[in-house]
Length: 424
Image 1 (spheres, rainbow, N blue to C red):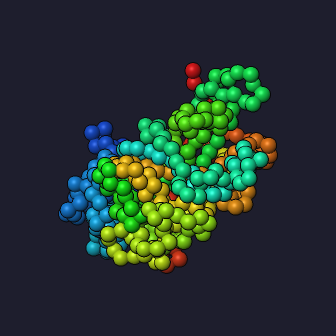
Image 2 (cartoon, helix red, strand yellow):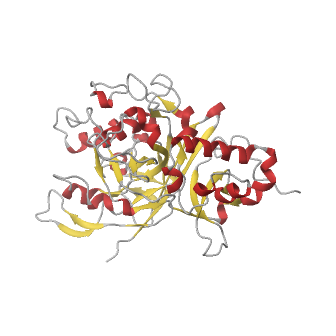
Image 3 (tube, helix red, strand yellow):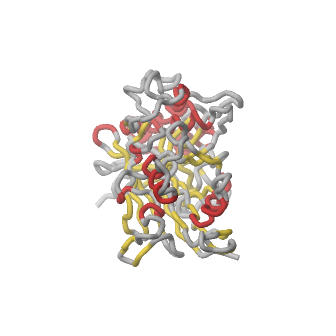
């Protein structure tokens, strides 16, 4: 029986030529001097993109024969499209099969790394359902669960880029100050309310000029692609420290991202109209008229809406606990980018910004444990025991897919983390 060619994918594979997400990997048994290289996922294999470019005489060798995605990210939208077309040809044109096949490595044999150097990290709070749930939880007497500014601007905070880690990295339980309403004084120790936040991260490629805001229309000129993101959160540390300046130690200890960055071009079929706006938007955030396609190919709100239909699944120790729909997120990634730069703040290659917790309208769609258990009041009943917040040894995995062309699915990989005990 002959060995199956890895270029011959099963029908419906979510990592077929219609997808081609980028990552960085080290092959099994490679010498230390060879180091990391850019890879593109195809089925259950990783294509050594730099080696393929060299073997096929491609002009993109200088971008792909690299230990990080940085040079490709910085190259800009036209180059992103050109490289994607070349990669698609390399894995689909029969004349390239004999050259490409030896450059495919089984996923099980490689080590995956953080695919780009994170420049700045911003996290938003863009899901109305999530924000409303927390408002009902912590401000039950308020006339509305949302703060007065929530529907007028995408709320966010600047995080710590140095603690963004790739999927599979253990997460050490954070330590810090906490104080419950009944405590007379704060105590210092490991978090007892360690949580998850199911999010989508957007990866900036082309930088912008300091002092020049990025308009909605230029979203795709700057954002290369997206990845799954888990914004681990110590709710007890956060509750004590966040007034009046916002999240700090309760968030900065770790943020996990998937090893694969899916290009926006792979998700054109997944674009959807965002939820209806119930408040008028200021012009720089108004996506109801005009073009959002940027200075590249023509497009408008009607044919290129700002939302994305991404179907997320969250599992705890192998048990599905939630399926948050990204299509329900109120503020789009383009609006988040426009607001993030509205004051003239510049973008850098490798900037990462998260959507904030993705939650849908029903309990089985909540994207955090604080919602799923209503701040610990209603424990989750799992086959391996009850859970309110995370315990040491727990493993959280997020996966996702999006509708692709011709009824295909676009796989978004996974982001996984295991909780280990606090140190010190």
